[in-house]
Image 1 (cartoon, one colour):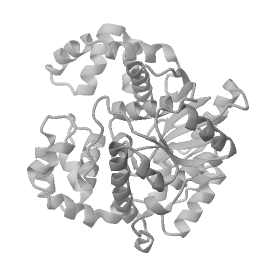
Image 2 (image 1 turned 135 degrees about the vertical axis):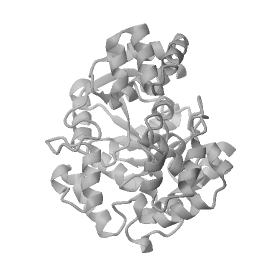
Image 3 (image 1 turned 180 degrees about the vertical axis):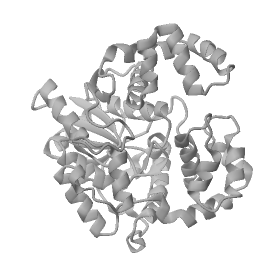
Length: 397
């Protein structure tokens, strides 16, 4: 049984190819469990489609069961994203393989990079390179090159390879009994604008948000869900749609209020606060803070976390429940098996929260608030009624 950690923002042909390839490798009857980001994604942004609609697209594209990766892990660094996703797949008690797409398509150098980064010696090597004035990412890659060779180091220069390395590190740290399965990424590179047979999610989002043609870029099932959500005024969601509300929140915060959301302890929040006090557009704040040392994704996460009051997961922290976003017939059979084998409580209905521990109840309550804020990013504000987390159940197909 295969597990995938994904954003599906939106679900596209490359995602469908990955699921089809898994079944060619593991057998036509192999079940596929996806741990999917909730309404907020790793790059520090709102997902273009609400999480249950994206779960529906995944089910239509071949997944059997979709579980939510809660916001403190989904809107976080690659390390924390992997930390939460691996923990949830392992906690199901039924997933045997951890599948991921990557540029190299080769487990060998990925595993070598992961082993190197689990050896404390790389940190000393990285400090020597940092002293030369390079970014942390460049220093880490140089340290791995020194200790494990060029093949391992090259994996830290490509975004999907970086995630794959973090999956392997998380599995090792957690002692997760998941067999890694590296699949080559097909089609356009991550964040590429190429519109070939397998366009990237970023290219598709760009078309959606610009109001340009997008339908020919997606599987027909995803396109139909998007058509429905757009007709209902619920898509595409965009941070731009609630820009004034976000600016109002940021301007109401004192400088020290940003500290918990800094994410690196380097004082970036001082620079961010200065931009908030001098800029009138979110894009200007991001541009004003971005430097070679502070990449855009990190700054976007600081902005998102500050806006939501969302403190990202800490090292070693893992989600306290398995929340179901959607399932088909095979997925429902898996849920029956998970209720006997899972290491965490399985949540399908909000009412179940009353039976959970304090940590889980608190996180579910915070997700409800974050979802209410997320809906303010929908094109039609009349659709953004509070309480969606308590009224919308999983998608069952």
